[in-house]
Amino acid sequence: TVSNQPYRTAFHFQPPTNWMNDPNGPMYYKGVYHLFYQYNPYSAIWGNITWAHSISYDLVDWIHLEHALSPTEPYEANGCWSGSATILLDEKPAILYTGANSKNQQFQNLALPKNKSDPLLKEWIKSPQNPLIAPVDDIEPLNFRDPTTAWLGPDRLWRVIVGGEIGGRGVAILYHSEDFVNWTRSKSPLHTSNETGMWECPDFYPVSINGSNGLDTSVQDGLIKHVLKASFNDNDHYVLGSYIPGTDTYSVETNFLSNGSDMRYDYGKFYASKSFYDSNKKRRILWGWIKESDSEADDTTKGWSGLQSIPRSILLGESGRQLVQWPIKELEKLRTKQVSFDDVNLKSGSVLEVPGITAAQADIEISFRLSGLKEAEEMNVSWIDPRLLCEENEALGRGAVGPFGLLVLASKDLTEQTAVYFRVFRKQYDKYVVLMCSDQSRSSLREGLDKTTYGAFVDVDPLREMISLRSLIDHSIVESFGGDGKACITARVYPKMAINQEAHLYAFNNGSMDVRISRLSAWSMKRAQVVPIQKRRKPP
Ligand code: DQQ
Image (tube, rainbow, N blue to C red; front, side):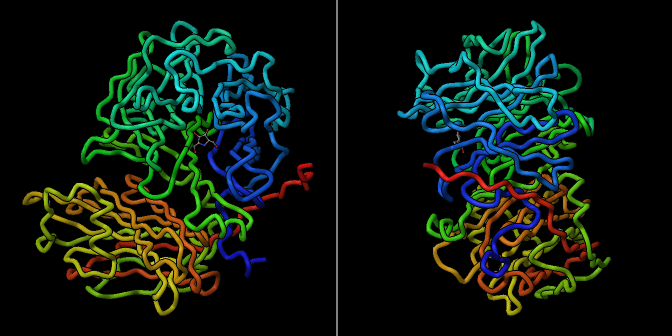
């Protein structure tokens, strides 16, 4: 019931019970969106990893199907780990995934649909040639996993990368194949870095330099750049670069962890993500795993663990230097009762309630206009880590220009609140830096939760542009998009008082300068329709 499950979400993807982690093999096929995911059929803690399978016609409402892949073979005795789908030239989808054997040594495997004319792709057959790629030579068998969607080169050979760690470096190991079964390792990896360890769940795809459409994974010409994403240190990091398919050379514009330009999909909780090309709407969509911030004991009590982010459409931003993400348009069909106002002065030190919506289940868009930034505090050159800056300058502390933003999942007396806000600093005499923070430190009166504060810089010019924020609030998740999707921060919170009807929403300004809310729109969100999975048999 709602009262004993206050943290279950209404419009984020989650299975009815048990453990879920990485999104796997997302694809659009014959009018149907497919999502597979890492799932433990037997408990709320990681283990027995199976590919669970759900389908949707709009990425909002979901139908849970039978599991697609369960560990049945020796090469996957410890689980069917992450992988991706590729639509082959005959339009048949293929799944490449990692199997971990009883010693956790990792192998890459192929599965094909039993009946490719079934748009639901209910049954999958593992290739009798599995395992297709074994960890030989210098490859570390315990760090060799998560094949990407494959792409086709001008030589008609398929390419795929597998994540790994070789000699202590993160690496995207590259393979070629003519038939999708026999894979040959390329002399050089697609990319490697000595700044990081193991790369989990790599992703590699083109983005258009000034187009507004997403691109299919094999697109190689036109004004494009290529994105390489790797998952490590609890975050999904990416670089941009140019890829020459003939030679498989990938020259990057930045390093994964270079000071100050460390680019992440999301600066909060968001991991092991995967993108796919939606040929239906000509866009690239990104899914990411949002894990819990409570304890394993809490998860066992709840009976579940893990969410997926709202699917986000992902594009190269106008600057050409970073990606921008935005919740898929379809989500707006769940918007119901709306409250909005224009042009309101948010006085220094004020808190303004946004009444009349279901604040625990909402979609909020707010934009701020700043008039003059003379009072902005000086930015110190040593301030390079936005997360630390947010932690040191709390939401409740006073600043000059900000903190201003939203207090979400807040109790009436504000003792519980998650603050999503901005501060503006002066860098040079007319250059400003916009900091975005998500402060969970007061999100719950409960103890034993991870209440880490998150932060990111947002590439907007506060003198000439408005500073916008969109937050999706769904009971225990706050998914925020700053600067029209230039910086994303997702947090998990578990309020004790501010649940269901007891949750409130406020706008606030703790800066000494007044700010103007140019526009605020907030909607109550309906619940997505999810048809629950049939009763499954218990293990013997
Ligand atoms: N999760 C999978 C692995 C992957 C990791 C196992 C990332 O394949 O590297 O459940 O969260």
